[in-house]
Image 1 (tube, rainbow, N blue to C red):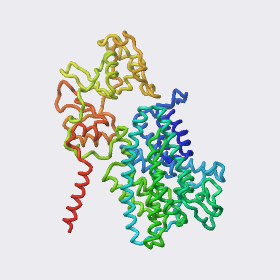
Image 2: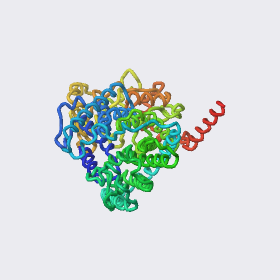
Image 3: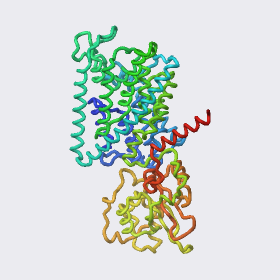
Image 4: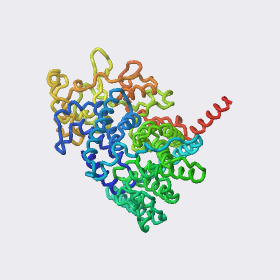
Length: 611
C-alpha cells in the first residue's frame, strides 16, 4: 500500500513538474501493486482487509493477477488494450498459458471500458486536458504511406541508426544508474533528495535557457499563433507579435503535445534544423540523467520523443536536399520513434501493436515492422535492452524464454549448491529456528526415517513462510517426539492459507522461551508431499524448460541411485541464471565481440556458398 501511494503521488508530481520521464512504468507498477494487494488480503497497517482473500491467496493465481495488473497499466497509459496483452506476453510473464491470456485480455478490456466512460464524463473540458484525444492519442490516420521504393533506403538507415543510438543509450544509462545506486547507498535519503533537486534545476535551466538559441519564425496562416492554451505548440517566448519560437514550443509543451507535433503531417515547415538538433541533444542527455532518480519514472515517452526528433530531421533533410517532395515528415518521425524504441528496449511485437493503436493507421504496419526488426537486430549485436539491463543490475531472477546453449553440456548436479539444508519430519523447534536464522532459503526438504528403510526418504518440501507461521502460532508444539497422539489430533487446527494474508511474519517477530525451543513440531501435515523432482544426471537445459513451463519455485534434485542423502540439491530461479552459471564455469562465457565475429563469419560463409 505504501508503494502504491508513493507511486501515484510521485508520478503525478514528476510528470506535471516537467521532468523528462514517462508515466507508463508507474502505471505498470501501480497495477501490479493493486493486484498484489488484493491477493494478500489487503493491508493490516491501513485497516484494509477482506474475508474473501482465501480465494486469491494461491501462489500461481497471485502471479497471474500481478501480470494482469501490469498489463492493465500499459493499457491505461497508452489506451492500447491489445498492446497491454502483447506486452505482458513478450516482456512481463516468464511463462505463459491460455488461461493467463484470457485473464489479461479480460482485464485490459475492462480497463478500456472504464477509461472510455470517464473520458465521456470529462468531455467539454470538465477535467482539464484529461479527456482530450479519446482512445487515439496520436492520430495519424490521414498520413500518406504511398512512398517510392527509394524510401526504403532512409527507412533502413533509420533502423540502423536507431539500433546504434539505442545501444549507446542503454550503455550510458547503465553507467549512470550504477553511479546513482552507489550515491544512494552512501548518502541515503538526503542524497536522493539533493540529486533530484539538482536534476530538476538542470532541466529548468535547459527549458528556459535553450530557447534563446533559436530564432523566431513567422506564424503559419490559419493557425492560432501564439497559442493561448497551455497545450499549444506555438509559443511566443521573446518573439514579437506574429512570430513564434519553435524550440520554446518543444521545450514548454507536455510530452504528449511534443509527440503529437512531431508526428503531425501538417507541420512540415514549422521546425528549423537547429531547433530540432538542439532539442534532440538536450532531450537525450536529460533523459539519461533523469532515469534512475528516486522518483517514479518511465522511458517510453522520452524515447519516442528522441526517436521522433531525429526521424523528423531525416525527413526534413530528404525533402529539402534529395528531392522527396511528396513524402511526409511526420511519417519519418514515426519511423524514427519506432527505431529508437526497438533499439533501446528490444521489444518488437508489443511495441508494434502499441504504436499502431496509438496512431490509428494500419497501413504503417510494414514500415513499423521493418524499422523495429532492423533496430532490434542491430542493437542486439552490442548489448541487451534497457529493461533487461535493469533486471540484471538488480539481480532479479527473470528467466528467458529459451535456455542458453551451454546448458546442454551441464547437468542439474553441476549447479546444485551443497550441502542441502533439510529438516526432519518431526523436528525440534530450536533446530528450525537455527536453520531459519542461518540461511535465507525459501524451501526446505523434509526427510522421514521409517523402519522399512535404512536411509531417510524424501517426505516433501515445506516453505519458509509456513515454518514462520507455525513458530509464531505455537499451537502444534508438543513435548515428546515419540508420542503419536499429540500431533495427530492437532494437525488440523492451523489454516495456513488463512494465516498467509498480509505481509507475513519474519524472524524478528518470533518470540520463544527456552521451554518452547526444546519442544517438537510435526511438519508432515504442512509439507508438499509431491514436489517436482529430477535426477542428478538430467540435462540442465531440459530442467530449465521444465522449471519455466510449469512455473515452479523449487525443483528437487534426487540421486540416480538410493543412498544416505535422498536429495542432492534444490534448484531455484537463481540457479538457472546465466550470471550464476558463468560464475561457476567462466570458460563457457563467449564475449560479445566474438559473437559478432561468429555471426559475420556465418554470414560470409552463407553468401559465399550461395554465390
